[in-house]
Image (cartoon, rainbow, N blue to C red; front, side):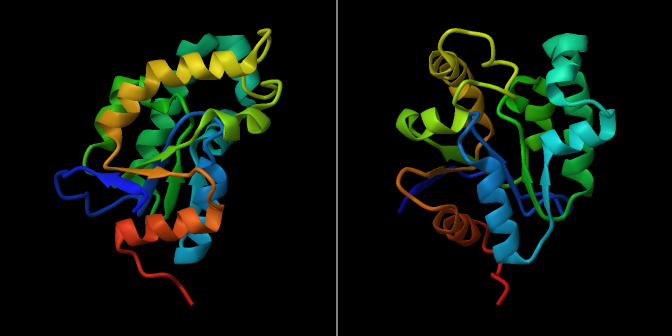
Amino acid sequence: MTDTSRTTAPGPSRGPVAVLIGPMGSGKTTVGRALARLLGVPFADSDAAIVEADGRTIPVIFEQDGETGFRTVEQRVIARLLTDHRGVLALGGGAVTTGATREALTGHTVILLDVDEDAVGPRIGTGEGRPLLAGGPDPLAAWRERTASRAPLFAACATHTVDTTGRTPDQIARTIADITGTKEQP
C-alpha cells in the first residue's frame, strides 16, 4: 500500500471530503481535480479562492503585502473553505505554516501528497508564478529548503500520506478515495 495513516479524532460533520496538502509542485490541484471528478463532488483550490476573494493574483499580493499579508488572507479563506466546502480541497504549499490553519485542519481527513525531487523539477521550472521560488538562481534548491523546513508541519497535519512517485493523478485519486471511504461515482 502506498499510504501511511495515523489515528485521529472523528472528523467534523461538515467540511471537505478530503484536504490535500504537500509541497509546491506535489500535484495537489491536479490530483484534487481527479479525485473530485472520481467522487462526483466539487473541487476547490485555496490559491484560486484567495485570488477570487482578494481580487489580486498571488504574486501581486506577495509583492504588495509580503508573505505575512498573504498568509493572513490565506488563513481566512481556508477557514471558510474548511467550514463551507463539501468536496475536495487543495491547499497551497505554505498553508501549514500558519498555526491557525494547522489548528483548523484538526479533525479533517488531511492527505499529504509525498513527491520526490525528480518529479518536482519539471513542474516548478523557473519558479515563475511561485513567489517563494521566483527570482533566485536555483528554484529547485529553494524548493528543497522550503520542503525540508515544512516537513514536520506537513507530518503533524496529515492523517494519511500518499506516495505519488511514478503514479498518475487518477491512480493517486483512487488511493485517496479508498482512504476516505467515499464511494466513486459511476
